[in-house]
Image (cartoon, one colour):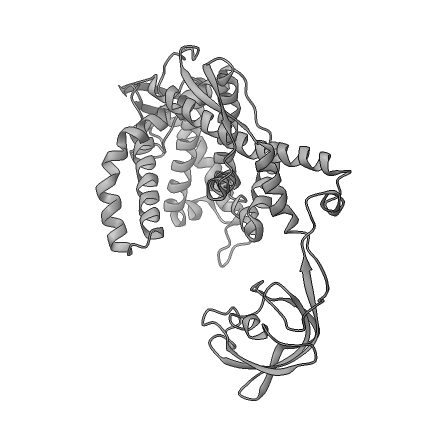
Length: 447
């Protein structure tokens, strides 16, 4: 087998293959033999059909199979013999027809990884935030935590239910006088204002007294999961059996005991560590992203067209999805994405360069991510996505998604290593006491 590699540019190659006639004929012999072993024709036992019949009846199939085998063989030989050739796109094939007794010629054209020398990062400068949670912030977080560990006891000093109370009740629901499945319960516990029941139900129990019997008329929401109930008006015959008052534990020994901590000091220390960890994990991610952009800006090598096209398509789809999420109609979202996409070309190109550079660093530094590491990361992602965890696990059954995740994990490891070499200035920050700003940081970390 012969092949000749031709450079069509810094990141594109064309390879011309020529497979000798003897290889073509031997491959034909193998293919026809395999067909003959399976062929079954009237008047012949399976596997006993004459070769002349096989060649006549299965010529097209044989030519197709031989062509595939010879091309795959040539491609494998090329990659085995030339480790420096790293294809980044599906090859474009131009092939003559395979003819028995003649050499087979074909060409394959494809994008390849650019070649470049890695630059040191010790000249790159960036800031990394280090977050500290004050005692006031910790106390405020502990107040939120206390709200997750309420206790309930019989009310004292009043006899009417209020929002926040827990009522114990019997109820029987019906639609047009007919009971429906799941609409009846005894000794049901319901915290008023929790939103557990269909909208409007809990509010109508506010002001009720123990022993009271009443009918609550509420419609099921139009988007209720049970289609046979969606949008239907329901009547619930209710009897209030007891009313309990919510009590939030004070931030002290009582709360520490409720969450399983030895004392309040250990709970505060743990809460401070959790808050700072949440903010500092986000800061680490931002530092990685800043360094990744700086690394991408260090290089100006040509980006393979196939990677640029695919990445631009991905960015366009993201712009479109963002526009739809903001409330725009699909046609308007398409138009907006089309207007903005060219503005993103420079950023997309920089991102591709950064990815390729980080790939080279990971090879140079022998950074590895095992299958077990990837699986653990998938489990962690699923665990933080709540009810969508199983969908996440299913999504990562796709080997391409797992490969992309493994690549991101390798890049994160490389960036953490490079951060030890770059000129990083640590900037101390106080965790904000403002609820909205605090929640925004927590939400960003969860994502």
